[in-house]
Image 1: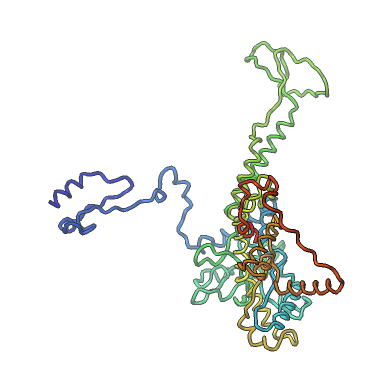
Image 2: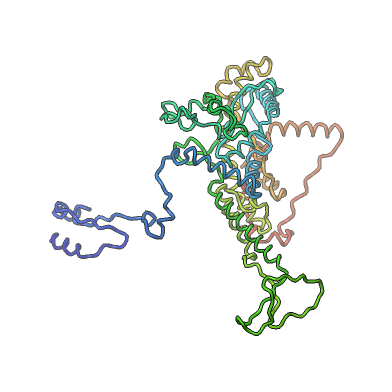
Length: 519
């Protein structure tokens, strides 16, 4: 019986997209109900994307199975860095996008809040660190590091001692470009080193090789070869490496705008082509042409002859000839739409909405602008958290290790806890709400029903709640002393009196969503 069923099934054609596997004799003899061993067909699924056809062969020609560090080998990263820097230096949109990204991520810089049990120690650490941060221009260096990651893929900073910074703590950040961190010629081929990063037995960076001179210095061709290969080796504890690893095991970074580099080139070429077509059409005031066939009835004229026309002049053309203008054949009417689409695609790899990338929100309404910003501001918060772990905590630990050695700068109790990095938090600039009245009402409601705290509300604005409350207490004390009455906030207008433009259904977004989109 089973043999007859197998013979029938063997004559049934397999389903499209599947592969039939003939049952083995042992499987044919298995009792019925034994799964794939009971004479049933085994179906092996296929993926259309895994097929190579004449149509997609060229598209996937560059796909490879290289490891993350082999795929971004030194030569590949060098080419990407040079092209990204060129676009940022010569493309206004590219420059504006990376500047906006750095300004929104870093802002005026992070503020430190210590969370130990000693309030006096917390205040002294915060004040001393703020003074040091201003002395070394920490916000400016962080913005430079964010710019370098966008156009170079990574940024390096050496934790060095600089007695001339004007601060009791001589710690300083010396920024170096990614070009200088590389494996010297005489050391290449080592398995325990990935382009300037020496690894320990567990694969962690243990040391960094930094060239003493930048490979692109103007006098590099007049420098002896020994000076070009001279390098210093710094322990990993003295080097801050800021990059985004996109693949497991990746040790070096590529520019954030790498996927958009071809699009920037297309945008510039299309712009230049449109301008050239318009200029070509404008250069010819008029042309004289004829519809007559060759050797037809038309007065003879000299080809390519030029005639200067006067303003407000009526003239008579030769017989058989007409007057016309050259038209720009470029689709100039779609130029604006093309720019919007390609800028939207460029900004997508940075999680940036179009109106931020273009600096133009004319096509947005109130609700769509807020919703588009939600993904962007969430991405900014992720970047800030990455900076805290990869850069700021490293800097704070090194600063505390030196600050405890300065007599009288910090309390004696911190000499034992500085090595373990005490509990702390970082505050960043907040984002202003487009409708402050609505945000204030939402904050009052959340505070009234105890779904938020003053610390959380001030943190969204990048401010320390303790400092703000102390400042407010000083203000109230002085106002009472001067006999000034505290102004009372006006009551919120009823919904029935709301303006007509606020009744747009697209603008009916709850206050929590509006607040989250601008945190």
